[in-house]
Image (cartoon, rainbow, N blue to C red; front, side, top):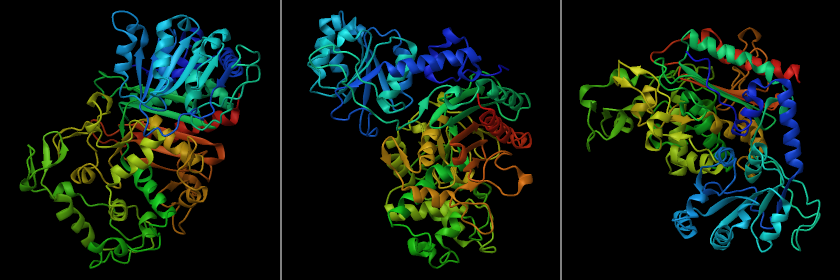
Length: 605
């Protein structure tokens, strides 16, 4: 089995030749060289014409972005970085300077309302390129990324759209300017000399860093060599068949400093894992979807933690669930049974191999459950279950089934649509969401179990959790899929106390309330799992601070945020493939990798 697949950040891709290594394994001199060039690039990059404050780009849910390049040697690196923040379609403008014309390019760009135009000083000698810029000046929002000699600025003297000019034409400058467009890095420099009547000395606009930056560990005070043990632990996981593959991401101080994919989609080793692969997050859904909506509605005063299920769900009023408080559900202290194996209760008349008006809920390829199975059978069954001791901690999936019903009754909108529009799309999360087969090719989605007892098929893009599957793939406790970068964005927002990309998603006090210890009988926050004070458990890892919050997922996933260290740690895997195994837990793969990060932070450079 191949040891790993390089998953270095895009800004490092062009530097492979220079450094001959991925970001997590740069020799010390390479890191010094990288940081030196990054600093020089920062000092030679100036933002002009930003009176409208278009840069950094905002409203990611409503803009459609295209990147147009004519002769930039490093356009691939540039576009790769852009796509870390939003979906950006690349166009090679050179293809439109011959038989196909600039007018054809404009036609092909018809459905994009925001253009990022990469230019070199050579491009500005071409009248067709100048014409293209003028053509789009009034039609669309335009950001110009100019690389090369500052004298070229004079040819843009009539330009009103923002220009980010870098005097350096290098892989580093390509990555840096791309990140600056989205606020991944701040801009503060001014022109050192006058280039035209418009672009005079001391011109320039400043921006703040508002989103994740993609760089190397040394940029966050960590020696790359001290993270190499992650490779060894990941290799051990695959060698011991704890999981066919995995993706690890570490963000420190708002910088993604480690993002690597290891192994393969399956043990057949046909398809290597990639950092942009989409995983079934399992119970991470509880905090990355349901709890996010609960936080929003609580902050808006539409949901009270001390109200009861009966206050929001009329169907619960004639049951023993009527007086259960929302707070009890969020803390897993409602006395609910842990789960109900609905898949064991399926009757032949409940499902079909083909879809129809009667069997309209797709559970997996070749498996459809009858219409109303969730609303007519599953939900009433959950409401009829007996109660155990209220006030005691017992982890239960039923709590988040019920929370989904509650938030949907308040918003009159399905959970999956609400979190997609209110959070994921606005944050620039491109893969996160429920029902991924409706949006992505199957080869981007990591397969989970080869289900031989229920659905009798390999699960590819259908939620592993049986109850969530029977509910149609959307549930409060499971069903969310995403790649590591999307989770990093979401939980960097949480680490920022509710703000990301210049937008406030939550008040700081809301984040603090839900993520702090809120139970007198467990370690839990509201929706969130937390650091365990019982030292022998070493949970979530031996070195995590008592401020740490997050969640794990049954499929072999976890997200942990440690405010003390300004840290986001993400581990994604499909440890349930082809069958469920406990080796990932027994080998302590996730916490050991997390502790490597803490030790590296402690050692510093």
